[in-house]
Amino acid sequence: MPIVRNIRLSLRSKQLLRREGIKEYSRLRPQIKDTIRELLTLVRRDHLLEPAIAYEIYSITEMRNDQLSLDGGAVLHAPVLPAALPGVKELAVVVCTIGHKLERKVTDYSENGEPLRSLLLDGIGSAAVDSLVREAGKLITHEASSRDLQASSPLSPGMPGFPISEQWQMMNLVSAGEIGVSLTQTATMIPRKSVSMVIGIGAHMPTWTQAEVCARCSLRKTCPYRVRA
Image (cartoon, rainbow, N blue to C red; front, top):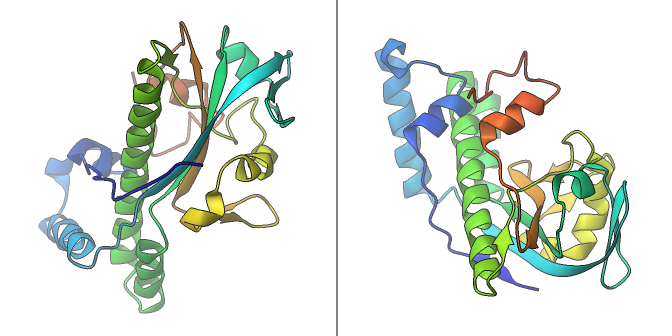
């Protein structure tokens, strides 16, 4: 199963500020601006990001209202998949992570009485995961286009119609352990800065924006990281 490492991530200012829960950079205190710059330098200097992607592409053997069956006998029980991916022929199952190092540094700051640095570095990690998800999408899109097919936008366990418990099946479908990703008993990913997702492949696949995903989310009214249209 393919493993991709040494991925170049782009920490875009707008995405970074969203993940910090910051709406207007111009209103930030100089101390916080300086701390963000220091932390970004630390991330680069100490190589706190170790991005990796594990994925596999499966042919779809059967599609029902509430599940997709894949070659090899695996089944994903998620009503959103047949609804969101009409005409899908293949399914890319993807797990990606930025590794443990940044998360450990976040914990160190918290335990050493530096909550601001802990919070801001955690936001940088979340922005890095967002960038990694985009890179994973580009990878699958390239694979699809090489066969004159299209790739959909990603769907992840935990979204409406895609139970978080399906992550157990997804871990079995890719070599997640080879990139250091595992699950707790409650299906929480370890490292925390990791994402599992599926991407539909077919002749005509739908795509959607992050704002459209946020608009459908059950936390849309309270989430500080919401993207608005």
